Image (cartoon, rainbow, N blue to C red; front, side, top):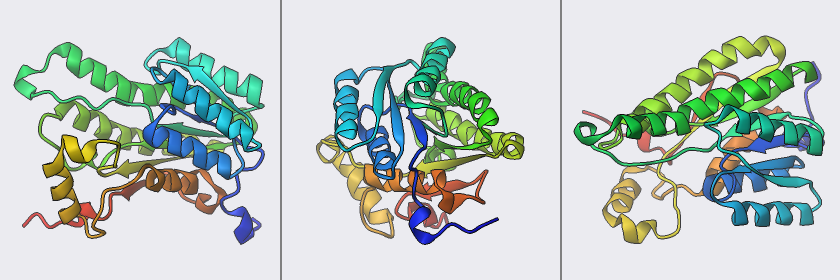
Length: 260
């Protein structure tokens, strides 16, 4: 195997990527970063249509191709439509970033079956549906890269989050299982597990949490969407060509904290 030149390691030119939950926040940052690396991008969104359309226009203005596609990724038919549009309008499917999800709070003793199921569906079922649909399209192309957005809560449970903790732990194990099954087809599957990521207003809404996280993280700050985006770019790129089934923590080092 010929080793890529350094300038080619993060190059996604002539690749097509699908990013779910791409209208805002982490998903938007990932889509923007992949486009900067040369990829054409299909932006999946459920509620943030105006933002996704604006981002698609901005990416197109930078010289790449981009489309915004409404898709509820808990629905099989929506996932299939998203992947088909990426193929038909952008020319293929080489990279999938499973970013879509929800982050609700509910006490275990007060949680309804509906609360539980909605969280599992949005954060875990969606990963299965999109991974299956993408893999079926990547196999005839000779391979691809799939990156799942998990969470440090997969290993470090948070209160009021038993449904979310379980879903993200499932994402990590699904990543490993999919890597094992799909590696023979040239498809790499990895996970990125972010810690607390900054968003507008978080300091006002949860000042104690921001302060505690910043104090606990060896790198002394919250993450930014761009930090997660760069990790996804690495795992999707030729720089990670011999990495599959891995979970990359993007948490400022907070998971290094000693328990006792």
